[in-house]
Image 1: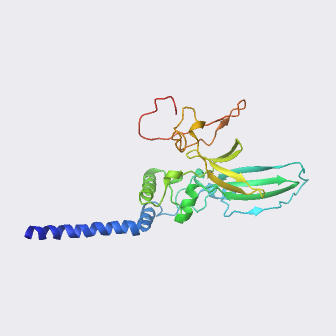
Image 2: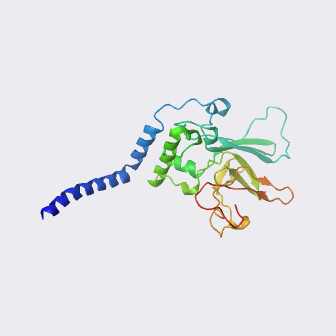
Image 3: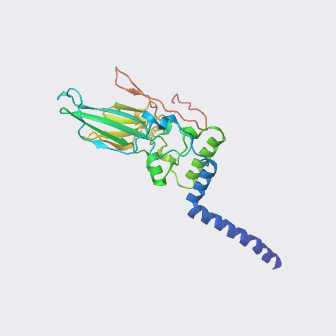
Length: 267
């Protein structure tokens, strides 16, 4: 009996501590992540960055101008089309070091039709942007942060958020900010380490995000057994090439992961 009492006097406090830790992780996990980030990543003011000033300064909001003023000459009535460009435009002010490639993708469009022109800009609704809006601040690791010991803390922070269920990396972490391509009647916004995002140009010239595209197995030589992303593809180069003779798009995807290289001749 004395041994049982001693054992219980040791086990019960340890059990209480374990239960308390579990409850803290479940109910205060956001507080834990905030403490970690602002203790090890964002304890200093971020250094000034040229890519956040002047012509590179972020556009703070989405706008639509349905009737642009033509200041010289006139637009031909037969001219009908849309000029589009995308680029990095951070939704949140960076908390740490910033690299030009880190900004959330924003697409700008000028729609010309019937002798008139309109303008609209929209953030591309990537999984990364949607999750960070929900989080209320930057949450994913950034290229600009991946330097020195701080880079290790940035990766550890993202992994902690993933393990605590605060971030879902399964739908990609790209920003769709690098380039646009129109192929097979689809407008795609590209980023080097993610799949494309399919966009749609509205009559007003505004651009809507349709979905994060997939690469079907049938579209890849040697391919993938019908898995989402086709043959395990999770990345799609931001600079694909179109064969002018066949009209086929050529791209590649790459990833660093454990395991032996494929033996079937595929990438």
